[in-house]
Each structure stands twice: as C-alpha cells, then as structure tokens.
Length: 118
Image 1 (tube, one colour):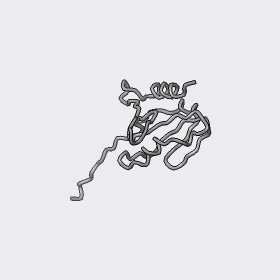
Image 2 (tube, rainbow, N blue to C red):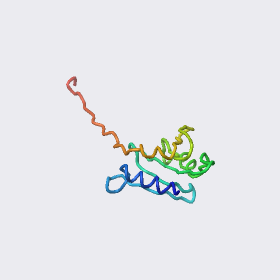
Image 3 (cartoon, helix red, strand yellow):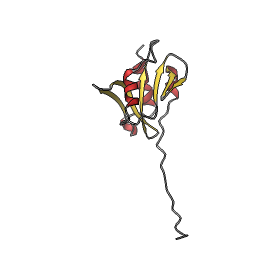
Image 4 (cartoon, rainbow, N blue to C red):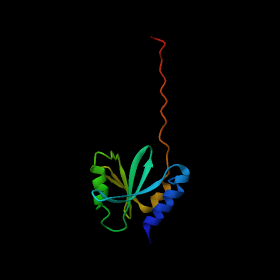
C-alpha cells in the first residue's frame, strides 16, 4: 500500500486543499532535503513525514528543517506503523490516526483597549 497517497487523500478530505483556503505542499531543497507534506496548521507551518518501515525515527530532511531557525517550526508529525510518542519537536502517530486530523483556523485575536482612565 502507498501510505503517502492515503495520507494525502486524508489531508485533502480534512480541509487541506486550495478550495478550502489551506493548501497541501511538498518541500524539496538541496540543502535541507525532501519532506512529504507541509501544511499550515493552527497558524504555523507543520511538516509531515510518512514512514512505513522500522526506521521511522530516521528522517534527515525533517530534522534539518526543524533545526533551521529560519523556518521556526514549532512541531512536526511523522505518521508510521508505531504507537504515539513524542521526541523533541516530533510527534509520532500511527498511520490510522490521520483520520482524526482536522484543519483548524488560526485564532483571530481581537484587542480591546480601555482608554477611560486617560
């Protein structure tokens, strides 16, 4: 089975598409490497990798992007055939959990000022 196709279809179905104002991107850089998906999630860039083998913790491109301060990546997701776990900024999820991943809108901030005391 091609897990990347499954993940792409689920991301599209859950709000990560141009028609829904949030796009699904692929990233490839000679310096950083290649990421399976990059999406906007809760107002931040979220890199997503899909791993099907036992070496799911080996993700050079993802590590390079996370370590690059210019990108300011708060977290990254790896969908794999293992249980949920967190290591640093990387959260590992079983592949089936993509069905529960929903797009969220960035929180709109409204500031109110009280000038009555001036």
